[in-house]
Image (cartoon, rainbow, N blue to C red):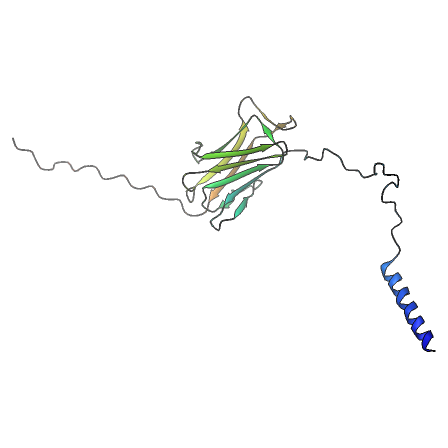
Length: 186
């Protein structure tokens, strides 16, 4: 009787394990002869269109995203470093940061280019002013259009944002010199 209990228990455990694991997958995993598999991966899996992302160096020493597709201007913390990325390389382009008066800002820029993307860094000598709006513009260097690394035309990018805080008030001009001061005697 003891032997029956041991073998019955072992059989029950084996049956339970088989039921819990289920049947092995019967679909073929690939050809046995080492030929090509039927996987449908395309060798040219780059994105269809260029996608841009814009980030800034936040005061907490991390990079923060600036949303590009908003109707309202996103609010951004004061920064002196911006980073633009694209999902494909670009040809015949220029990147500029514009102030509210549509003037290009003075900056020290660096770029890392490849067919699979672009990283464009903008470093400003001073942090952007609180309360003011700025626009990052990507457009053609020459002609009417710029292209991605595949030769397709890319739409211009105009990404506006505003720096958090009240506008810095302009300093009042110094008072004019007083008229009618001391007279000179000869």
